[in-house]
Length: 149
Ligand SMILES: CC(C)(COP(=O)(O)OP(=O)(O)OC[C@H]1O[C@@H](n2cnc3c(N)ncnc32)[C@H](O)[C@@H]1OP(=O)(O)O)[C@@H](O)C(=O)NCCC(=O)NCCS
Image (cartoon, rainbow, N blue to C red; front, side, top):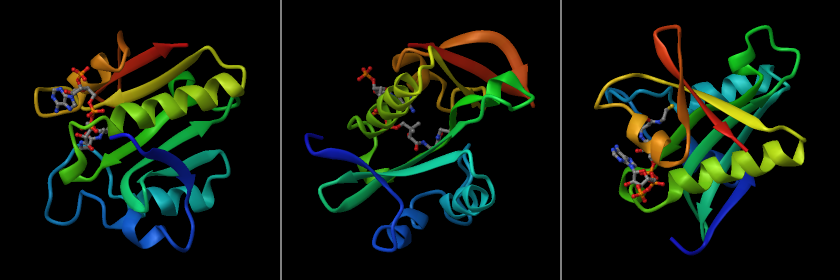
């Protein structure tokens, strides 16, 4: 996709964002966007963003930037990533990862992390293709990946 942009949540794009998958009764290894937006509302260090293709919302990514976070894996990195089904395998997810990495660099960071559900049905191959490597740690039964910037 040639025309991708990252943007803050607004009254104009919120409704499209919360309609991204998963929707009940979908089974996907990520929380619904509405949950993430609710978490961002009470968590000032959350960084929720939509990915736009022109005017269309094709993805949602939420990072967290909190150097004081007790668990190191949650200090800087991706919490959530949801891509519209019809937009998958077209570079939206990679674009979102690159935008989070860019924001991390702006903040003077040299590493971002992500946790993913292990297994062939999960996003492991995607994250490895985006340059993450497995740290070898598991946290809450999820694989910890890191991307060095
Ligand atoms: C995982 C997800 C974010 C990938 O988004 P996407 O926009 O389809 O990914 P991209 O098109 O940017 O893919 C980047 C690369 O990963 C590969 N890839 C993407 N999804 C893949 C999958 N399910 N299996 C294997 N490879 C995959 C692409 O082929 C591409 O490879 P390339 O290096 O050869 O170009 C998307 O499928 C999704 O929203 N899944 C459900 C929710 C989820 O798992 N979120 C992550 C929670 S931590």
